[in-house]
Image 1 (spheres, one colour):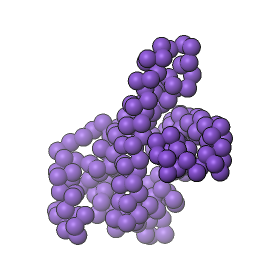
Image 2 (spheres, rainbow, N blue to C red):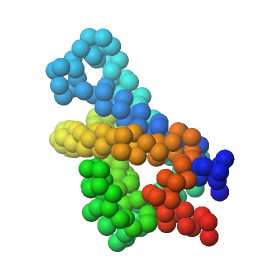
Image 3 (cartoon, rainbow, N blue to C red):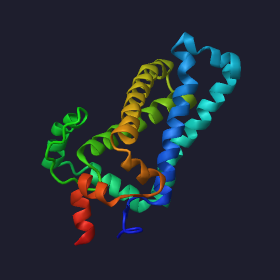
Image 4 (cartoon, rainbow, N blue to C red):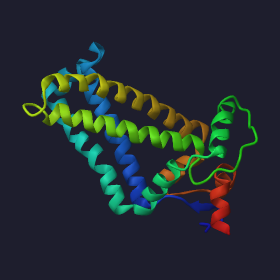
Length: 213
């Protein structure tokens, strides 16, 4: 189970690759669309050109769409665990969510043992699934629906697309903060595929118990 007596294997290589592809493509989608929403970002049009940003937006949209499909084919174990965990929300997860805000203030409350994903991660996974679906559906309707789907329907997709992108960006900032500042040990799992054994026991005790029994 242990690597060099210190680390616990956590994520498949292709699972981490898909995680980064998803994150980078979302960020690029957000950046290439910014000039449409804020005049302060119009300088991007001056530097790259409106057409170039439009093409880049569509290029990264394709990556954003196909990344989960690639993951399902190349990292089945990781995605299977993700789906099973996300849709198995229990009382221990709820207790975690209620107590977790205290940790942001340096307080360490007694937490129930968590599985492969803790309660907060499960909520984030479900949120990301919803955001992905809304962005993909609304984006495709606006992109390829011209002449096929009524313009009034396509127009209604714009605010939905924008709201999903805004919520996704806020969630991404929170995710980055928690991974880099609050729990830097977790970042190793998405860069090297393994996490510190002590961190695993402390943050994912129920999962570790299953590994050793």
